[in-house]
Image 1 (cartoon, helix red, strand yellow):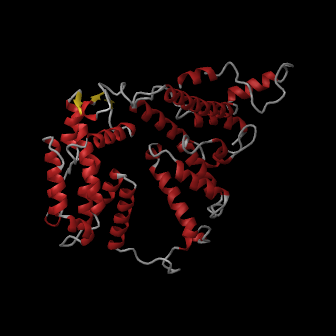
Image 2 (image 1 turned 135 degrees about the horizontal axis):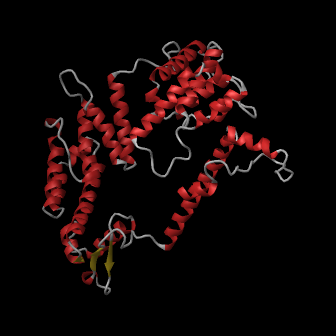
Image 3 (image 1 turned 90 degrees about the vertical axis):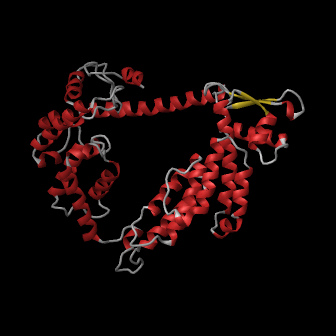
Length: 423
């Protein structure tokens, strides 16, 4: 492609999507219209035109961003691969690195409009990887031929999932653990439930109690009834604002079972979670309560007011309870737990230091946006308007000598201050 033709094509390639993105995103209808227009432009350009040079030197693959300009980057990449008759796509080579970088960063919404081209790239990369077989990474050695890996069985998959769930529970990432456990429970079986699924169900019941205070579904019920009994006592107790004694007794009766199932530590955490959910239920009902009342309703020891105060303070400090403890005297029996009326009041309300930290984060985001602006300036410097402006400025003695950071011509459609204002 001649430089003049590239000058007219390049702005079209960079036109969609707009970058930085507008403050008000385009509607779905407008987005669909604009991306289809861009696709039509790309389909009308001969493939060999994409591999030509650009004004001021360089290559389109160095200018386009695969995460932003997904469609034109894909077309240019395929044009380069076709020009080299796929020999240029050697594993580890320059085009290989660009192809794999594209597959890691592409916009999944944009590729919906170019399914044929996207599938062609995936197939080409796959074939190149199989043909090369140079094992540039350690994963290349994990094949049936090297015997470093065997056939992955159904049980291997379930064992992987149960291990992942146990790691998540150890980190108290209950929602993540539930996802792994539900994957085990919904795994296909022939005519009976596997032992791993039974173990997963038991842990799934407890993880649900710890995450949200209830069990939202029932599966593998026969073998998990003791756990369902705990869940039922937990649910009824929270709903009726009962103290922890009944749940404690239920867990105590099944001590040997929990121990044999390796779930005793989770049961201990269930007791603690029950106490937290009970206190949270009080927050939703009352504006304030005497500490002895809170102790009676939520604590294992009905007269240990100092321990209750310490536990409540821990919840407040951890951000799990939006309340304050009014300590009127040295006697905890006179203390009052006052719940905040909204999230803007009470301990979670942001302090002056927290507000300063938020401003610092905003300043960091602004700095990143400034980097985007400079990158946009660089891309605009390749546009036809900018090139014309440079030509006109050559005769100007006051033109800057160093063009490494070119000034923005006034004729371009926006300036840096406008963009910064959009943040």
